[in-house]
Each structure stands twice: as C-alpha cells, then as structure tokens.
Length: 297
Image (cartoon, rainbow, N blue to C red; front, side):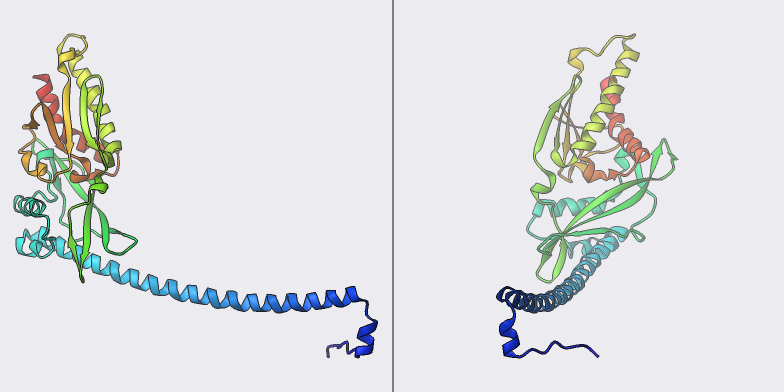
C-alpha cells in the first residue's frame, strides 16, 4: 500500500513558507499538466477525424475527376464527337471548335506531322491528379507510348507526358481551356542563328531544342559552305505556339508552318513532354527536320 503523509493544520503551520509555496506550485503544475494533456488529446483526435474526413472527400472528388477522364478516353478512342461535346465547357467557342477538329482529324493525341504515332489507345493510362486547393479545378498528367515512324520504319516506343485541365461546373467535371497563368508570359530570345518566341512554362524544353538545333544548323553550314560559318542573313525566326489549332495547321513532316517570317511550331506541352533522352531525340527530329531542310535550301 502507498504511504500517505497526513498532516494536521498545526503541522502544516510548522512547515516553512517557502516549502509550502513549493508544494502548492507542484500541485498547480500537475493539475495544469494533466489538463493540457487532456486538451492535447482532444485536439489530436479532432484533427485526426478532420483529416480522415478530408481524405475521404478528396478521394471522392478525385474519383469524380477520374470518371470525367475516362469519358474523355472513350471519346478519343472511339472518335465520338457527341461524347466529347458532353465534356466541353461551352463558354470558350474557338477552343471548343479546335477540340472537335482535333478529334475529327485524330490529332488529339496522334502526332503524324512530327513523325510520332501512339502505340496503343488510352485504355491502360492512369493519370496523376493534381487538385486545386479549392477543389474547383484539376490538372491531370499521363504518359503515352509513341513510335517514331521514319520513312515507314517504326522505331522502339518512346514516352510523352500529356496534360489535361478539368474544371468543376456545378456537380460535373468538364474539360476546359487552360488558364493564361498555366502558360506563363511570352518570352523572346535570340542566339547567333535563331530568334525564338515561347511561353514561359515550356522554357526549359524550348531552350534545349534551340541549342541543339543551332548546333545542327552550324554543322550544316560547315558541310554546305566548304567549312565556312553560316552567313548573317541565314538567321531564322521561330514561334512556339500554345494555341491548339497549330496542331491542325502542320500538314506533314516536309511542310513547316510559316507565319510571316516565323516558323510556327506547337509548344512542347501541346505535343507532349518527353520523359527521357530517347523520347527527346525523337521529338527533336520531328520538330526540326523540316526547318533544317528549309534552312539548307
């Protein structure tokens, strides 16, 4: 049994004041500590339950977004314009028209103008879902394998990463045009041979393409001009366009799109971001082959 220290008031009086204050301070400390522990336990349980509820609601929202993505898959795989129309936000007329035309032409995912053809449809593709903090929009990314077709000879598959944007309208999730801040500001830079304009989002990919293209153009000059450097008037201008209609304007591998003096190309995000070096080399060839040929001429 525990030993209890029973004291009378007279005995307590004989205890020095400093010691009495110390005992009272200890009692108050333990009372406060126990109260704090219970409060902390209550708050922890409340936060845990709130997080569980938020996780459950987040999973439900993600499932709704995934259902919209699967509907989009069905529309693309079957080239069904009626299904696609049920997914398009109706307040962006030109963008809606572009999406329908891309579906009809098979170019929502197919990239014949760059020598890239999907190996398979979207049935096995599961996207990564990035929900906005307010749960009113979501960015989806997924990879798709492509074959590079060079003069009818397919290569080993390469991977491109695609991005879709969905917005919540009432109780439905609909495919939407990307907001301007998705792309970032227009930027213009100039190297010794190339002047180019692009959106900030794709800056890294564009800079790499331009650096490699410039090396190839300089090598072509050396080859064609018996070791001489490229003349000043050989400089070319390029524009990497974020408008999806540019995917419709590129007819084939031999016919670059030109607007004024600019070669016009789809910005890499429209085509698909390469996930490794092999994918990048295939994309680089598709982008630059017609430009190199036009430059050489």
